Image (cartoon, rainbow, N blue to C red):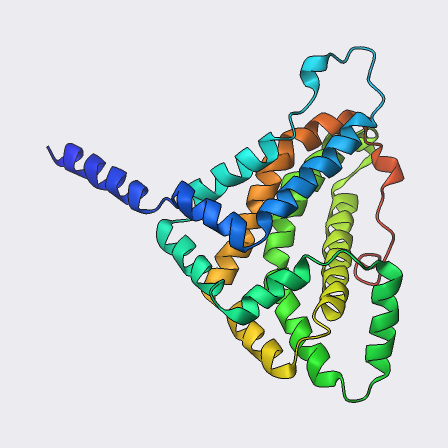
Length: 259
């Protein structure tokens, strides 16, 4: 009898800890994730179509890109509770958060545009407060923990299974991880500087308050893990065509002195 009660309680707990499909659909809508997933599907579909087929490769090995969205939703439903998702959605009721989502959807810029703006910002002696706020915001929305998930779940399997993988020892893999985290983190911060250029200091302060909420923490972690889960099979399938020796990280101050 006790075992039956324990099992019932476990099932009830699991049910209460699952985000509903409706919540996930609402999240995709308000967070702009739906458009980003469609963009990913198109991007990786083009990459797949550009591959030269192997002699032994069959059409059955072609990855169905529509599974990216399906698996992304599946992961969020399983790994975010309904209460957590409700708190995540609550953040998106804030006008400043919606402004942030809108800013993230911008596409009319390139690396040169960002670099030019950063140079201008750094030359402005009065921009210190703005830059500090955005750096703090970026560290929350692009946390090292989330980036680590992406590296370990996607990049690491790709490197370990790609051509020339046998030449990759632990030191090289560690260096690749450090380089990845550094480059992605710095790149994200620079892009945020540009995308948030029209935000007032008051709006940036409000955005930082949102970024510091626990909801952003588990949202960010879950979203990057969900993206990794959705793309993992495609990346593993791509590994046989990925030459690790051509993608070794450049030495940086953080990696070249690593023991």
